[in-house]
Amino acid sequence: MLRRLALLNPAQRIDRSVLVCLSLLLICPVTVVKGQSQGTDPAPEAKLEDLVNIDFRADLRLFTVMAALNVAGFDYEQPNQEMSPVRQAVRLALKDLEPSLSSRLAAFYQSHLGVQAEARRQIVYTSLALLITDAPSFLLTEEEDIIPNDVLKIRSFAPLVEEFYRVAQIETLWPRFRDSYQAESLAYRPVLEKVIEDILKYFRIGPRRVLDRQIILIPNLLNAKDLVNARNLDHTYYIVVGPTDELENNYSSLQHEYLHVLIDPLVEKFSTQLSSRKRILKLAHAQPELKGEYRDSVLLVVIESLIESIGLRLRPPSDLTAQILRLFREGNVLVPFFYRELVSYEEGRMLSFPTYAEFLLQSVGEDSLKDDIERMDVIEAKIQERDRQEAEKQLQARQKVERKNLFSSMLSEAGQLISNQEFEAASQKLEQLLAEDPGNGNAYFYLGQVADQLDEHQRAFEYYQHAAEATSNLPWIRAWSLVRMGKFLAFQEQFAQARRRFEEALTFEGELQGARVRAEQAIKELPRPE
Image (spheres, one colour):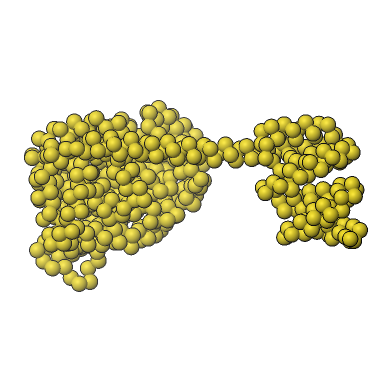
């Protein structure tokens, strides 16, 4: 699942708040949310999304961009998954698109692949869809300073989208699928409500609007399954959810973004103080899996570390230590510190989290990182050793299975050779098998059969004895081995020993493939003991 990529880092959002807000009113007008003004208790019947400023949308811009992207060659789907029914239907409806336009869309997509994996390429096109104006113009703002660099690289896709909208007659295609998008939005309401309720309970606060911040959830049924893109434009937080067979799969992503709505303003209050903590950024840069968006922003490192720490407290993973290490190596270097401090917050039970955060954020400093670097190195070494041992166990298990399969194959070949009366070749194959697996009771049983066919009855007796003693053999093989040993002993007039073998064969339970009947008959044929 793709994690959140902020279009603007926190410092940029603060410096450009007025400019971006005015720009967004022109680019992406938002729905006016019903409810009371700040400072007034909301009406009892108000919906949760009204209280916390959430909007659910079916977005024609995103539908058009993603439809064009699918025509252009975006075929990515999660492993072992089928494309959503809506995606399949839209692709089918557009298969006869005017060839020249299809070719130009494909050429654009291929020429802008870059080095990113296909699962991540759709992120930038999703961002473009959020930045262009509504149909039919699909214009991208001229103010380049508010357009992320990744979107700037594909800005010339916007005119293709406008042409695609006209030529593909998206205006008539969209109504066929709009209800599916609206139904998906409706399905997410209880999931997001549960996310919010859990967080508000942890924060010890009631539903509230946070300044002018808003969450907008948009389904993207033309994307791969279980992909969630989260982008923020100034104080508007977009959550773009791909199709899924289980909405709960996206719980963590929804939780992460709502935590941004609550935590971003708390951290931004301390922007000047935190921005001076250069050692935090230096430590983040030293991590091998550092996310690119962390590279120039101490505030983002603080925000993401705090959000990830709260997520660990709300839903502890099965391997907490390994998850903390992974987050640390990705640049969330304050996760160990925040995780420890959150335990104290939970035990206090008095302060709300916004109040506690005032003290917590003021305490972030070089002491916050003390010992964590060494501690993470020790943890990593232990995890690597654990993983090495687990990998060794898995390797041994695979090798054991492979050897078992090999031995079964060799035994099967020997059985076929015996059926073809190629006894010498069968004997060689079985001896080769015993060289690899000395305790293979089945091989001894087959060798006994070969020896019987060659009238080497004493050798057959010895082979059957090994087969009867091999506890790994099936009961019917051991029983038949005893019967044949008994027959040999009876022929040698060693009747007492023969009887013991026949009687021992009768002690085995279950289906013995006729061995029980043959043993009972053989006992009757023996002379009565004196």
